[in-house]
Length: 503
Image (tube, rainbow, N blue to C red):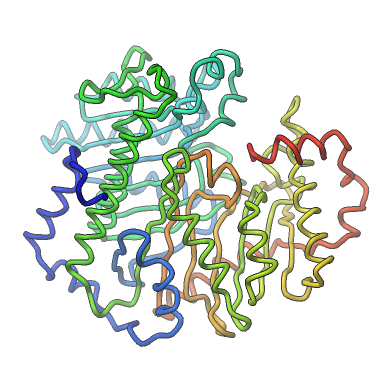
C-alpha cells in the first residue's frame, strides 16, 4: 500500500540523488569485515530487517558519551564546527544559563555562516505543550534566535492531535502534556548524529543520568533522521518571531482545529511518515552492502499515528530470547506495557536484569502537588511486577534493580543484548522510549538498534552498560516494606485504574 502513495515531501529525493551520484563507492568506505556468518548479528538482524531501513557504519565511527557535562560540551563543540545543517529535536529547551549559552552558540554559528555566505540551516523541533509551559519557556528562549536569523532558522512545535476540543480547553498547563508529546531526542550536525534520551535542559547537562551515542560521518543515516524531523515539523505549528504560531501554507490539516476528530490530520501525517520509511528502505535494499561490521536500524514509534516499529522490534526481541542469552534493560520510568511483561514472564527463556529509578532518583521526587506522588506510583508498579516474578518462581532468571546515586536522578532508557553466554553485548537499543504505555501509545519516539560484530564497539557498549548498572541495587520484598516505601491506598487505586495509562 505504501508504495502507491504519492510522496509530496522532497527530502527523500535528495537522498536518492546523493546515492545515484556517489553510487556504491559512498558505502564502500564502511566495509570493514563481514558479519554475514556471525550467529549473534544474524539472529538480531532477522528480528529488525522488515521494520524499516537499515544503515551501515564502521564501529570506529560510533562512540558513547557517559557524563552529562560531556554531552553538553559535545553539543557546543559540534554546533561550532557545523558547516551545512544543524537539526535539534527535543521535548523542550530549558531556561537556565547553560541553555542560554547553547542558544548563543547557535546564534553565533548562524550569524557567522551568513557573513561567510554559506548559510547554515538550523531546524529545531520541540513539543508544543512542554515548550509553552510557564512564562519563561522554550519559545521565549528561542525568539531572539528566530528574529535575528535571515530565514535559515526554523522552530517547529509539535501538537498532538489528541489534545483538542474540550480537552484542550479544560486541561490545565502541565497536565495537558499527559495526552501526548513529541518525545524525539535527535541532535544532528552535518553528517554526525547524537541519539539520546536527554532533553536540552540544565539538569541533563549536570546530574541527570541518561545515554548518548554519537554516530559520525554517516550521511545517509543523518539524512534519514533529518527527514524524519522535517516531516514531523511539517505537521507542527511554526514559531514566529512575535511568539505566534501558524501551520505551513501548503499543509491543509491542523492538529486541533479541524472538526473531524483528528482523522484527516493523523491519516495525512501517517502517510508521509510511512512513505519516508518505505522510500529509505527501498533505497537501502536496492544497494545492499555484503560486508559491514555494524548495522543501525532506526525504530520509529508514533502511537497516535499507528506507526509501531519500535514496539514490534522490542516484542520480537523479548519473545526470541533464548535460555543462554540475556538482556539488560533500563527505564527511568518503569511501566512496561502488559504485552512486554507477559512475554518476559512466560515466553522469554533468557535472563533479565531490569534497572529502574529508586524513588529518590525519580525526576518527580520532591515535586509539589499531585506530581509529588508520581514516584509512589512507579514504586507500586515495580512492586506488582516483582511479586509476579516471585509468584512464578522466576527470581533466578529475572532480576529487578534500582538506581541509587546521591544527588543524581535517573533518566536512562534502552537495553543491551548478550547472545548465548557471550561476554560482550552484540546489540544495544538507545533512544527516547521508556517501553511504557505512553511511549507506546501516546508519544512520538525514536530509538535505534546498533548491531555489531566489531569487538571494540562491543567493548564500548559494555563499558557504558557497566557505568550505569554500577549504581543498581537489587530489589527484594524487604525494600518494598522498608520505611518510606509504603504506597498510600488511594495512590495504588489511582495508579491501577487511571494513572498507568499516562506514565
